[in-house]
Image 1 (cartoon, helix red, strand yellow):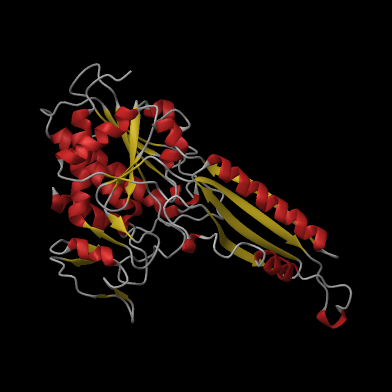
Image 2 (cartoon, helix red, strand yellow):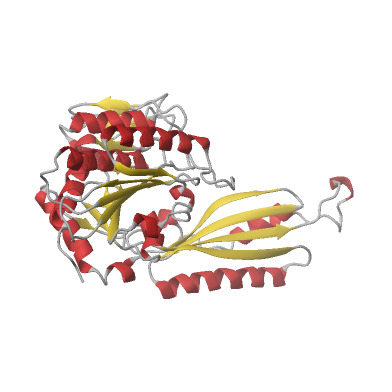
Length: 408
């Protein structure tokens, strides 16, 4: 099983599925179609049922039940990799029997236990790393590989008692669009799990409340030689606005349940400039206060200006799934027991981010998040432990075994 799992993962990561937030298409990149069609064919060959690839690149499949009148459960992972760092020409490096050494990457880049102490948890294990020029794609191709390997095991062993199990691989999760085209009614599960977490044991049912704020600066361009009293530089306005933001209320100064403002991108010219902030907070009241504070800051800044202006548009992305999941404690209890059966210690912690499950939980599909085994997502130092991926596979199988009672 471990070799099959590894082979799948190594095959998947070599397809560039990097999503593109500037595209209006779904999926936002052609590579996601390429991977979805490869997976569709693989599911056919492995004997999955009711395989469906939609016009929006959601791939569904089912494993028929071996027991009647028990819950239907689902597993979800996403096809795309993050736009933060290149996903093209991924060259995975296999490190067997890791002994705590510094791992050389491209150029002068290294993967070092000094910078990433979690490497030392994997002495004697098998790691897959990048070559230092791209991300790896364990987020979330490790999840895809674990789901397919686990559910194929159920197909190959019809003596294992379980209800119907469904899967879906979604596009564009990394740019917040993964759940937009997800058909909850067609999926028809009582509950589900995203396999989109990090280190072995992670079990997450709290996530940020999230919003995106786009602040646009309008200036006035003219020839700099005749600019006196006429030119209004939108980029200068934008820079001076950002200087008013709190210095320590940012991702690099926050952890645990801390929220933050994050300047995700900026671009512009003399005439127009744009700042894009993401707003995050676990607490709903504090989340709303952050949005109100940023809006008020724009208004106050406009009052200071003698020329030019700023506008702000805020759009919510997803909400904290906690208040939905807490109403269904068996969903967490089953995942916890499934980990213990696999000799995995459950590590329940909040997600300092979001998953498709955050949106789906508010659309009637309770959907906490489980580990897939990766670390350092979205960058050149990403790596995954193969044995952790195997544990995720075992946990999925155990959940299917345990979810055979009717819960009211």
